[in-house]
Length: 103
Image 1 (tube, helix red, strand yellow):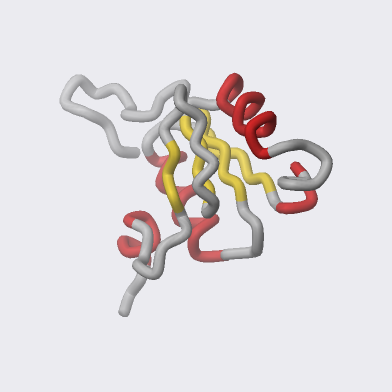
Image 2 (cartoon, one colour):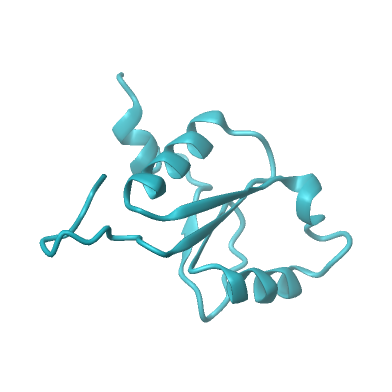
């Protein structure tokens, strides 16, 4: 596991919520594995789990998720002002995916 100079894990005690609108094996596995190796816990939420744009408004989902998570990762830019947002919607490989690609 990755730790900083003091020996503590960089994401120890932190939770990252990962919002996926469509399946993505490499992105999911690379983010979950990377965050786990940093000492944190990642939660996967697919389109059927939250009903984005359906059951609840995006701002309400962002408010609720930011109350329980330290980081929100998603493809859509629905950032809440009090939590960092990691965007997974990019034409370039995400840093975790780039590290795991053997090309």
